[in-house]
Image 1 (cartoon, protein in one colour):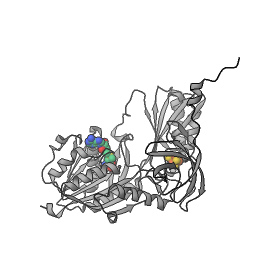
Image 2 (tube, protein in one colour; image 1 turned 120 degrees about the vertical axis):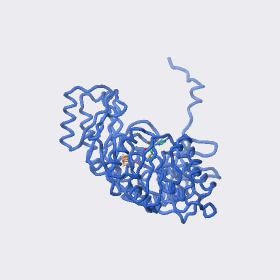
Image 3 (cartoon, protein in one colour; image 1 turned 60 degrees about the vertical axis):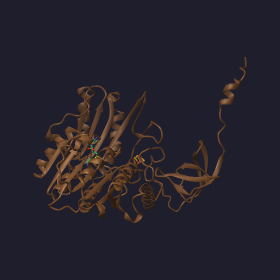
Image 4 (cartoon, helix red, strand yellow; image 1 turned 90 degrees about the horizontal axis):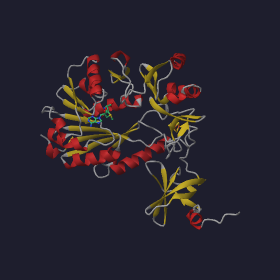
Length: 442
Ligand SMILES: C[S@@+](CC[C@H](N)C(=O)[O-])C[C@H]1O[C@@H](n2cnc3c(N)ncnc32)[C@H](O)[C@@H]1O
Ligand code: SF4
């Protein structure tokens, strides 16, 4: 018997929106082309300024619509072929279809717009390194569903995994491991016991950390060790019951920066772009213009990435960091670098009272907070009244908020630098130097 169509269900099926042509006149910081139709904005992922494209609305909204690119009718001169075969799907990069000089121009325009209330466009310079082959750390997610096994990065706007065979933003040594690891994991008889896999390259070489969701048998572990030996990497296991791999001081990883040595735990924060880290630390030392009279505060100091470079020029440095384990590492690094003019404190810098151990007389403050910024601690910095404040930020919105507070409290922006830590991606890293305004000088 033929079933009658269900009227309510039929009426719920939305007909696909028509395909229309658009002229693109802008680009968002997430690389979405911007078109305007009768005053309403349409964001089209993958379209570039100056292009004419056809696109289909996928998410109509009250204030703006989102559309899917269907065809490029007139391409921009700045459009380039993406280097990575996974670019269309992978959520890791956003800008591979745009020439590198225009990626920088687009990030500069966005940063200038974020900082428009406090800084002039002339104050902005650019610090850059290589366009590809810069990333020294990556986490590969693993998804096992029946016979299907995927190892790679999250897809754009979905939680699915793109099974990757290449990743040209990784350093050459890490990228050369992608295919062998992909093959090895897929033939591992206990693949369902594996979690994510972390790749790392530092001055000790390449290491791979395998997160386990259950105990592996000794035979499979031996196979992994043989694989590690064949490919020349160190292997770490994070067992299912461990929140962090337990390591002795001798098993730490190492990198050198600005003539100092940093030992670190392979699961702790480090700057991901080694070449840019060298340049950034050197620029920080130069911009702070340190002398043997300076008492420096290094906030959010991690394992001492900037601290020891500052300590080589200043009278003394106080480093403050949340994680006691990182503070322990920082103290060990102090010993390794033979520097006596450094003190480390473990404290939560979202709490105003964490300034109680800071002595008077601080002349320069450096801060490198996580994405949330450092708003809670800023009144303490104002009370310390340093001559210079140097702010490194991975989030231009919280930087703008914090810098506006500092400007409202007697500082002025002297220099800003867009630091190209993550080419091809939408991430923007910034360094900003603030000086005490002339009215406020002691
Ligand atoms: C962006 S990293 C910078 C680390 C270091 N400056 C470097 O270049 O390697 C931010 C650091 O702030 C620390 N951190 C995060 N929240 C914090 C808090 N509330 N108080 C103090 N430190 C914190 C993190 O553990 C991390 O080491
Ligand atoms: S993150 Fe790697 S795999 Fe993903 S698009 Fe970028 S280069 Fe390709």
